[in-house]
Image 1 (cartoon, one colour):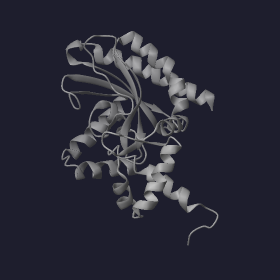
Image 2 (cartoon, one colour):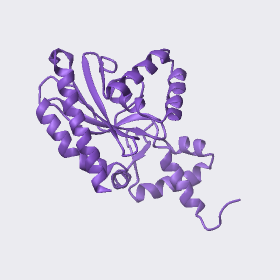
Image 3 (cartoon, helix red, strand yellow):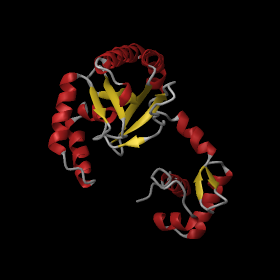
Image 4 (tube, helix red, strand yellow):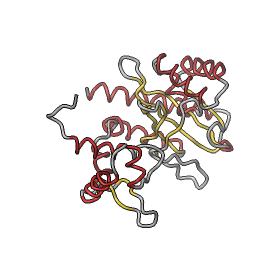
Length: 252
């Protein structure tokens, strides 16, 4: 039974916007109408209203629609990790200054159970590995994501394992052993798991209850790795993570 205190038109408009969350960044009116199972006429009116209000815009080259600037601004204001980013930034900047390498912070998308980069400070070196903010990767590849997976709730871990198997990943037992080592060690490192020639070192940021909040990492070309790089960089990251955790507890 439909709640008469709600607006069906608004609900449909929000459903239109929801279809721009996936990998397809642009949709035609016909595509949206088919996906929403409503008439093209109604969909056209909804899309036109969203364009008029700045939440969608038309790509005149393809004739399709994409998210507009007002949707972007709304997303920035809704950022659930704003406080974490704000408190972490001074400590991440110190790590970046000490190492002169790319420093990033990742969190878990609770819907997709993938890792998403929310902050990245690029290395000043000419040869470097960049991590674009907003980039999304599976949690079972690369140290920056594995460190999140290692400290996840066991039930969520199992969901990730099942999705990995569905994606064709076959080394689950090896992955579980790797995650156990990461948790015991307190940090993760990997070479070339996501990008060839890249080395990554990552540590978790935990809540006062021991729940995973985020992971911070350093990424650099493997040719710059020296004998003591892993131990030195991991210490810098662990120190920063402790400071971020303390700042979060103080803010609460």
